[in-house]
Amino acid sequence: MLKRDVIFVAREQGQPAGYVALRREEGGRSWSSSCSSRPATSGVASDTGCSPYAEGYAIAERARWLHVVVEQSNQPARSFYRRSGFVPVEPELFELILPSAD
Image (tube, rainbow, N blue to C red; front, side, top):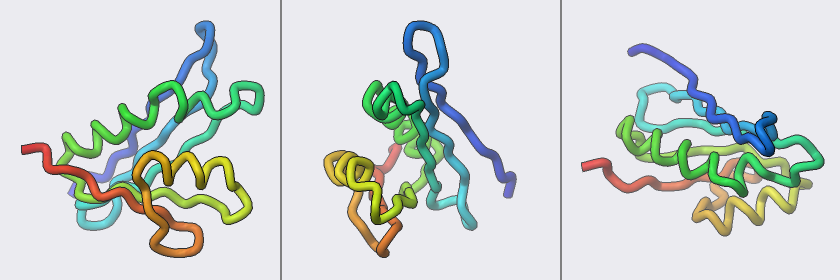
């Protein structure tokens, strides 16, 4: 199976402000996600809509789960992912069960 990464870039006033990256996990039924924002943008990669694009892409690729690793000390990110429907499945791993693309 072809393994590929996809990156969605958030922009603020035409400048890169953050990103969400997706990587297909073994078997292709789940994708892992990472997200980063410049400190001054306070989470623009997720807050301005990169995350919905990444989620939509994973659904279109027929993924069943989306995983993200969030450090236990990063409470703002953990709160964001909980509000977005992710649930903790391990101390630093959150999972979102995706709807079917069909």
